[in-house]
Amino acid sequence: MGVDCILKNLIAGAIITFAVYLSFEETIVKKIRYKGVIEVFLLFVIILCCMFNLVLITLHIGAYTIQFELLSIILLVYLYIFFIMYKKGSIKKESDKKIVLMLICLTLINIYIFFEPIFLYIYSPESYSLYLFTYLNIELLFVAFLILKRFNYGKQTVINVVSVFSLMNCTLGFFQFLTGKVLINFKDATQSLTELNIGKRISGFVIGDNGGGNLGAILLPILLYKYKKDKNILNFSLIVADLIFTIFTFTRIAYTAICVEFLIFIALSVKISSIKEIIINISTLIFTLCAGMYIYFNYMNQLVNIFFSQRGDTELDRFTQFPIAIKAFFSTPLLGTGHGQYNSYIMYKLSLFDKLVIHSQFLNMIVEDGIFNTILFLIFNICLIYMLLKKYTKKIERLFIIILVIGNLICINFNPNQTYQINIYIYYFILFGFLFAKDEIQT
Image (cartoon, rainbow, N blue to C red; front, side):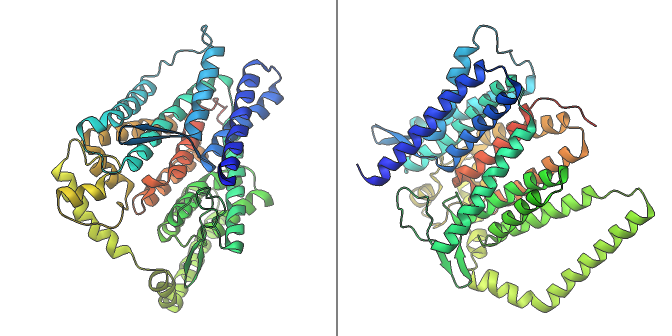
């Protein structure tokens, strides 16, 4: 057993032991302040598993290799312990029909993926396993938060946990830039960062350049919300650190997402209650427009050279792949090509070649999942967003939800976000965390 394997098992063992201890403590402790600390750690353990989602158990079933990851095991541990401790009527049955509908949608998707090898040819078992556990973990995370709801944790707990994670992610990015190494790849500890003419592309806890940029854009709304609620130097520094991290991922679509997020944040945050505020807002708008025009006319050629010529212009490759992906969809619209099977499917079934995975999570879902699963997942997400907007009537919470959802939509539809598990988990961690947080007095 190599040193990397021993280190991986030690980390996993420590996290699992800590999770079990926290689960039992949460079920028996009575002190409110102590319970708050435990809840922070309970949620942070989930984040830790997303950061170090190590493969712990590998099962070989015929030609298939199923890899059980740390996150799946931790979520199952949570569910098992909470269920055992509260099975005698302590867990209230969820009567909300939308919650039931969401669970049904996720369950049907997971059943479909599990039995997929029976009616579809699996060219890449490894890719199939990735999607199998991604959707499974989303459902387990949903159920875990549904159970954690009874502990009456607050949304501030979720915000604090995600903020600490953001700081850790930025710190890792800083050391990646200094060393030129990924640093957290247990399969290859010497893996170097992608080197461009303009610099090294950091990625943080996402082992993927574009994925790092997506993560920065997903984290920004939480940090904006935290700063909006409490304007201090620490919260402002968290925003600046996340922006610097995202810049050095050199992910263009993340830049676009962040610009849109800021525009929405500014537009919906504007309060017009006096002549003075009107003048300030108009002056800010004029200054911003003038600054934008100055940059456009004086530096646009240099920016295009940096972010397209030197960075590598892959946009044409991405858009030439869309017609191929659509052709694959129409060849099997109901069942899809199979999860993670697009590239091999078009090669063997359609005699076409595409060197890239589909650079749009939504298009990838339509092509690989088929119509039925896509509709189920859309219903799940629509219900989730609707329930969040219905629950939070204050403008600031609704603003945050809108920014997060739109920022995520921009990122996932121009990058292969379906392969960046940590981004998917963090996104739903935030939304589920807010959905099941205790109701607070709206003022």
